[in-house]
Length: 283
Length: 327
Image (cartoon, rainbow over all chains, first blue to last red):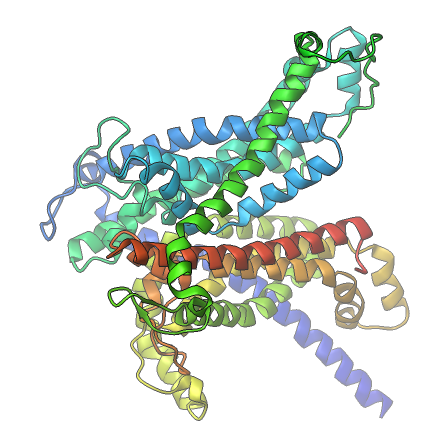
């Protein structure tokens, strides 16, 4: 009886442990399946026209997504100048100045803001930047993405500033530097590498966002000069092309998806290697 | 974090009046403090403004239909009837079904990474899983449309009908799009969150816990399942809540495969709708201000759902980090 029980326990051990291995292997293989599928279906449509030409009218073969690539860059630029300064300074506050209760509230709110569904951020940006001027614009899309950049930047800045040893601050102060001078010339530069990686990671995340752009930037088949007109972006193109009934657009959806995924993954790989090397908790 | 250095207190007692304020502001430290404080407060301001805007913009619908918004199920923007039930139903069904698959899968993978795999294998795998979490949701949508939907139509659906067809959940016509397809796509999207948070929590469980169990004659699995996992349960719960909040708010991938049909159905093959999907589809083409305000109210409902879940999740994770488990 005891022997049977022991055999049962040992086999249960073996079975369950191998199942956990299968689960881990299965999940990781999904990443490679996704990559493989996109490369298989998308790479054949990648050519110079794809990067340099405007979309052709619906149903016609050919054309490219040049305007969407430029659009993504413009939106990211806006997101960066709106979101990064706020995130950086708020992060400095939390790491260097913050009191107990207020810091806790700010940190908690930041996490909650990070968890707000991106479609709701889109509605918020619509109310802020589309309703008052009554038309969709690049600016509104930038506002939506900028809001999403803030929480990630705050957390990254705070984590990296905290990782700077106190002796550095004390050294600067012992030499007579005031607190803000210590922060601005010693602490922040020492953490700059990490903070910049955190910022890039934040931008990489919003670069793939579609939902907040649908009713702020809207999308555009043509070039969008200035900042006040609707604009296209890579994720928007992937979305509209994938749900369209035209074969050629669907083909291009794969290609645009491949370009988007490649950019996002490369940015992530680069940033995460730097972050892991610094030994700071993942952001 | 307050630095260990003690700042030199100013000798003069803080006098009142605008001149004193000016003098204080001439001190660089005070200025830096105030400026960064303003930006930190800006985050609170933006978040409150978000809630305020959603509340005000959804005013017309609240005035027109009141609380019946939450328990009627007719969505007829042209007739002016706004009932959120089909969308709330679709959101909950797809998210909970995704959790049902993702939790065992994610927990198992996290156990493997934290307990069995050698450190470098574990770290590399965790790195790849973080990458999986970074894949834009529209990419999952594309794969959903072109890969999961056809698979659902030709293999998964018929197989389920054959084996489990006696249950009401697996009956009815199978179009490829619908609740089950959306749940499968959502599962793939939330598993990385469960794995990466649970793995970190499991790694914080002290070594002696495992050694004590093994020393008492437990097998590796028994020590993991009966000692390590219960120890980390608070943090694991936190990871599950985080994942659920993600699933509830996920828009693009779900919109592309859910079928966009505001009906409540018992069959998981039936096309449905979620809150995020209806906002994405109808907001731009809203037929009236009332329609738009109804969508705003749906946004408010979604916001509150994720807000509460995220709040709980954060508290659980903070509790684990402070108490080292045993919450």
